[in-house]
Length: 112
Length: 111
Image (cartoon, rainbow over all chains, first blue to last red; front, side):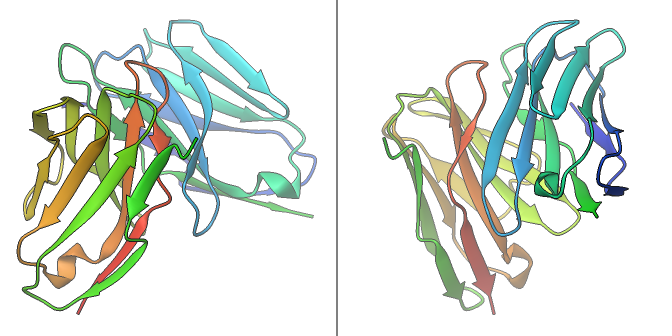
């Protein structure tokens, strides 16, 4: 059974600082996704990582995937208040199962 | 494009009542998913489908049933609602290994 763990679950950071959110998954998966959720809203896709070593960047966010370590990271550069949200990673199990399993999410608060 | 549409957006049920949540997607996606979101628990997979006429259990399937009679629709049923099923329910769809697109959610309260 695929399990996905994120840490930290809560993150309060100052504007302008850098930080990394970690996502570990328990079994083989080479499909990793990052989503953003604002309070009371649905989930918005941020990144799709489909192979080992994949790196994607959009603005102040950069995501990477290391399938050998079963680890994905979401790096935040020079945080701004607009990045305050909950960030989820999700992994897709394969071998005919195709379950999309989410971590518990990281609630990010960027403070002035 | 409407994307993924969930009906209804809000619902209050009494314990023991039944209801069906409808998820409709217009992207011709093969995969569809039902999740529930509870504070501190992230999104937990209830049931999913990899194609028309097929369904499979996820992490928390008890108390729920699903059907996928048409490719574009995925229905989630609660036969006898319980207060523990109070949650926000999200439907999602995807094409193969691309990202899943989510509906706007259904906030269900069981009293």
